[in-house]
Amino acid sequence: LAYGSNLWPPRLAARVRLLATLGAVALPDRALAFTKRGADGSGKCHLADAPGAMAWGVVYRMAAADKAALDRIEGVGHGYAVIEIDLPGHGACFVYQALAAALDARLEPFDWYRDYVLAGARHHGLPAGYIEAIASTPTVRDADRARDAQNRACLALTPVP
Image: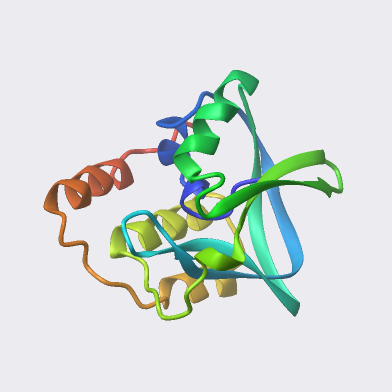
């Protein structure tokens, strides 16, 4: 289950072999927050407990052999844990859950990171209000010009249907 920058298919496809996109799912009592401390010091996404809220994610099928690599990229054990959730219509799915020690409400995402989440939400046709909330997330500019350029190049890619 992808919910952050992995919503953008070219970003996830650069990390793992995608076999299929299975569809968007509502995640009741969760809110998308950009307050997980990334290795680069900026805010990354996590699904915060929020009674009455609604977050969204997309279920992908990926090659099982790629899971260890994705775990490493996502920082399992260094900010995220892997949990399994049962999603109606999809069965058991794994998702990355931020560890409490990695959360900091003062963080903001780099603009390119927020734009991955925004591009993915638009691509998958998530609800307009959800997209508007992502678009209104305050951001900071990445001072690392090479990282900034690399991520902007990925954002410019057209997803394969």
